[in-house]
Image (cartoon, rainbow, N blue to C red):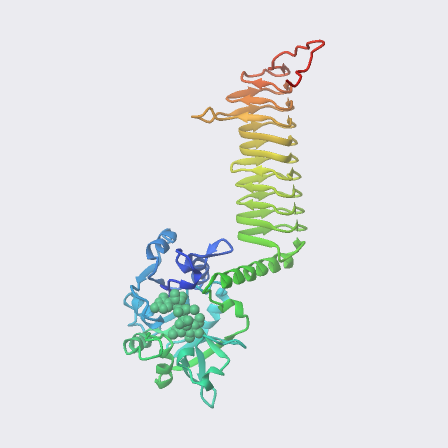
Length: 458
Ligand code: UD1
Ligand code: CA
């Protein structure tokens, strides 16, 4: 492991117009820095250093679980060269074979395969720059080459001559630099330039002047991989790009997307064969969809497992649940954490379920709340049924056996058990256990008053 990675993330990102440090803004449900770290972590580096300044506490807190990271503080943002300097004390510059890969925390979509190709090109006598040829180089550092095509320097836009501004090959900022040399070069870096900053890019001219060091460039094709984010418009643009990449992968895997531009994946999704997804579906965290699953429009699914041949209908929200094969959920159902629906269940519109197991073939077709419960097989929960699981202090459980029928508008006051084959009359308020094979009627007896006169207006 001859590689150390330095991620620059000290900048405030003024143009984001936000109190959140720039690199914590999210793409696809993960922070930009999270994306960079994810790519970096696949490279087999000895150490990963993050240079932070603005919002250091917030950033460190966000990544506090990752004990391996090396944090370097850059109090004042005096330039990219100055930023890298802050990480140097914890890099072993005595080993000439050590390489330093510099990444930016606000360039989130670089593939690890691109980085690993770049790293492979570098060695103790070669500095490697990832460059891009673009029709729109404004604002970026230009790659200056001599007549024979050798790179001689990088010149920043603000320091460039009119002639240099015509150059279309730009510095993406991503470089691999031999550590020993980098250390020497950084020590002689000045800030006598248009911005009064210590430019990391100035080490390129130093490398060109060093007989012992070659410079090579790897030109990247896909602009999005090296696109940085400076404002919300660019953040939104890269979010769409990221989601288009996700959509393409799903389509390639055989998933039918009704509109690839209207899907959002904010985490990891696994899909079986013949999955169909209608518009505006959002998948968060870790989601798996079995074979033949159909997802309706405007569905949100988070951290859930959906088994084969399940139908999730329009507007349904599922979080932390398992949906058994052949089940149908929605439209407009809300399935909350701890819910397990066994095979062939049917949960209809405006049904909320929390922390409950619903047995095979059971149904709640409309307007119900089922919380903290266990239901057996072939149970029918009528419209308007409420499981009263909360007495204001504690939560209690409702247990329901097989083949139970709960009539509409019933209230089941937990803790309560309805044994197998029980039947609850509509409108009942059940607060005592019901033994097997019985009918529970728990409502006021009906009285009819003949000849009743309606009130008249006074
Ligand atoms: C830099 C490059 C430029 C390149 C461009 C690509 C230099 C001098 N210029 O430009 O050649 O085309 O990136 O986007 O390197 N940062 C710190 N501390 C600092 C300054 C910056 O951590 O003191 C971080 C920023 O948070 C950001 C990254 O370094 O993540 C790049 O900084 P930015 O100011 O955007 O770079 P530019 O000067 O625009
Ligand atoms: Ca920038």
